[in-house]
Length: 196
Image (cartoon, rainbow, N blue to C red; front, side, top):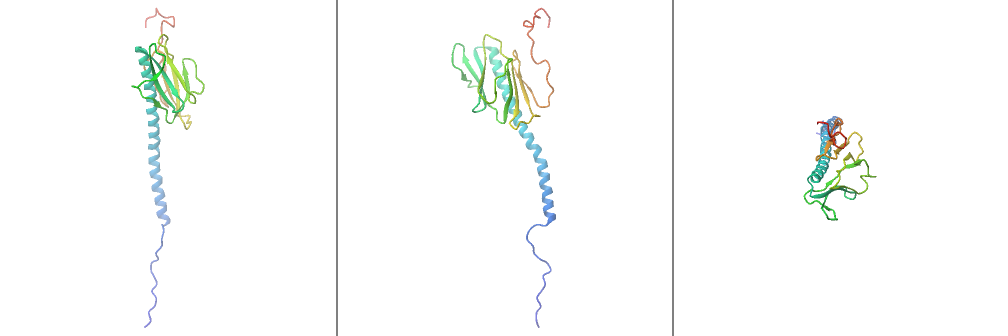
């Protein structure tokens, strides 16, 4: 008796079938679709936190200027891209960083526009600048517009510190433009006899 070779009924293949690949691609698409918006929200929250820290720094400077006792200034360091609160004792000549208020690095933000009083320093994000709040004069109003480094025109935060206010106001992307934030000095406006 001779034995006949057996014919394999099932062939072993290595690799994936087309259906398996399609299923994996669909699963990856769903995972990416769910994760991408969350990552964008995380970036936006980080930018919001940085803007709030800048507004807090400006508010602290305004408050310290209002209570007196020291000269106060805000300085931007272009190398580290950090805003610092500076103090100087009355009668001293040298400014120093306030040890109680840490500097605020801009991170992924850049200063698109900066107005101090009625003047705008050239290249507010590319060169160092400093604004002092003189003790004998009214403090200048500060308006700072910040955008992400990616130059996303739809995302822009505006920080306003009116001349007589002690707290800065943040306008977030999509917020309506605020009306009436700046206090009115009735004496300067010639309305000292008008009841408020």
